[in-house]
Length: 170
Image (cartoon, rainbow, N blue to C red):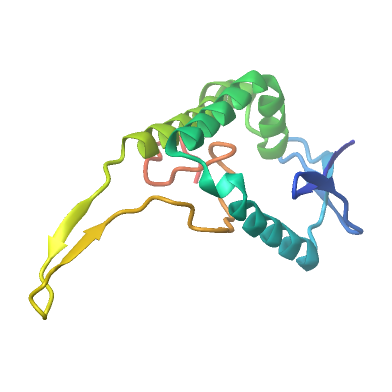
C-alpha cells in the first residue's frame, strides 16, 4: 500500500491521522495519506516565508525559468510514475492520461517559464494633482506564500481553466 506523506521544509512528515484514497474505477483502496494538521500547515507557511529570506527569494528571472523547465523535465523523466498515479487516482484510462494529462502537466510548466521570460516590463508616466507627475513601473519579485486548492481532474500538477478544451472533464 502506497503511503503519501506531507512535505514541509525539505522533509517528508508524518501525522497521527490517515485518510484513504480509492480508485474510482475499481473501488479498491490504492493508497493512504497523512492528514495535514493545522500545526503542520502553519509550519509549512513559516518554512516558505523563511525560504523567501534566503537565496530562493533572490533568484534571478533566468534561475526561476530554469527551475520551471527542470520541473517539466522531471515530470517527463518520471512519466510512467505520474501516469500510473493519475490513472489510479482518477480512474482515467491510460490512453487518455498518456496523451493528455501527463504531457499537459509538463507543458504547462514550460509555458509558465516562457511567459515570465517573455513578459515585458512596463513603465509609464501619470499626471498627479500637484503637477509634478509620477513614474509607475513594474518590479517582478516573489509575492510571498500562496496557498492553492486546485481541481484535480486535468492535468495533474497544474490546471489551466482559461485554456481548457473540450477534453476537460468538468
